[in-house]
Image 1: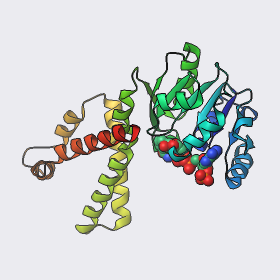
Image 2: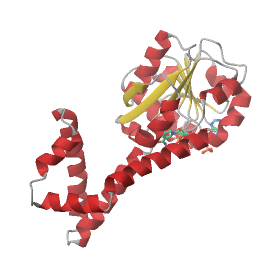
Image 3: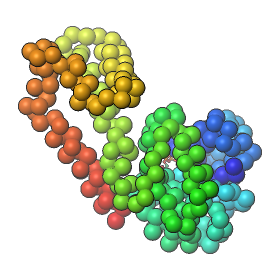
Image 4: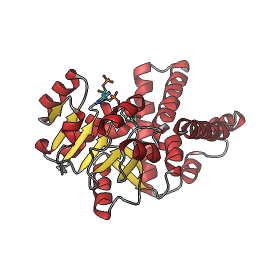
Length: 266
Ligand SMILES: NC(=O)c1ccc[n+]([C@@H]2O[C@H](COP(=O)([O-])OP(=O)(O)OC[C@H]3O[C@@H](n4cnc5c(N)ncnc54)[C@H](OP(=O)(O)O)[C@@H]3O)[C@@H](O)[C@H]2O)c1
């Protein structure tokens, strides 16, 4: 697959390394345009991909053009690329908050896939939620699913509105889990555990719980009940969390992120 990246930062690198690892593209088929010389040198040396500082040059022959720049650079990039994309080139944007209508209008292009990825995509454990314009063909949709599948899990949604919801759950989600982990480590240190040991306990409890949930096929509530014997230690902890309205607090956080995502998208 011939693919171009506009922006070779964290996410651009995560995507291209996943594509090369899964052999969906050969290094000679990947072109990266980035304004930073340091990034271009790094990507060329590490992956053997083609690099350029010229965004337009990277488009040549590409089946897929990935927009992996920061939202604040989007207008400038769109002004530069507008009118140069061929109708059969697929534009795949991972830019948070950038609406399809904005990208389509700015680029004067109709085949667009918009994706909300998350940071674990950097290690192939991502959760990407994506949608496509009606002009995106079936083979292009399969290509998009394969590209995103190389970075972890992917789910297609048939309406862009679900991307704002996904932003609040899977996009921002890693931060929620990290926040909980930070607090658990602090709690463990407060009761006397060494910080290193506390970190190990929290990390492996979280990983193990996630894997148990995935492999058992059971609901979280059922698995929680299995650890919560009446009158026991877990029951005491859960009662404390319920007294502090922990479930409502988390649901409220999701809603706050959702409202912000809608507002940022205009
Ligand atoms: N990081 C994540 O986990 C994550 C998750 C979901 C969505 N996203 C989205 O992914 C996008 C990329 O994020 P990132 O973390 O990879 O950003 P990043 O590391 O800043 O990468 C963007 C790269 O593009 C370069 N650039 C800036 N202007 C350019 C231009 N006009 N033409 C070509 N290249 C240009 C930047 O150079 P300078 O540094 O010099 O500006 C930088 O090297 C963002 O829109 C973000 O919303 C990221």
